[in-house]
Length: 206
Image 1 (tube, rainbow, N blue to C red):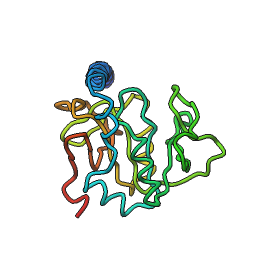
Image 2: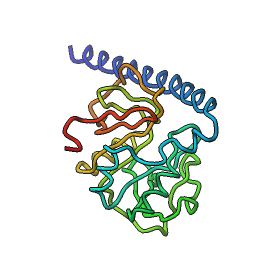
Image 3: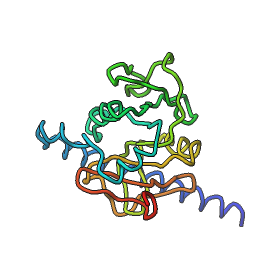
């Protein structure tokens, strides 16, 4: 009986892993195709200023964790400039093995250095910062606020490390899927912002 349960569990996890892998490949393609057809003006304007629900979260926060967008990810450079302009402390993540992401204060996105998986991140001399709002990238999302990342689990571990910090995902609308396959350690987002819509937990900005 026990071996049977063990094999069923392993088969389930293997199937879940395969489903997530296929979903990542599919939505990376969708995101890339969508981004390629955008003109430069639209790319520059997208996510430039936070919509009202996100602006309310930003207003309540002192230290805001942001990410340095790569490729076709929802862009963040203009948002970073805006946050600095309004006097917020902006922190970017550095990947430290399998640990939660380590956030460090950066005043200018141009100062980031190439790090893990060729993603720009702050250098070791940048001061550490504990965020009270986390804005994260993703490959896909669903209406239940589940997020599909790159597969390393870095953001889920980070969300668990900062349970009181609202979790906001930025994405293009084409990254929405019917249902993201989830595991017990996966942590939901509180808000999802696309170029055309805001999805959020009902009591988040009340």
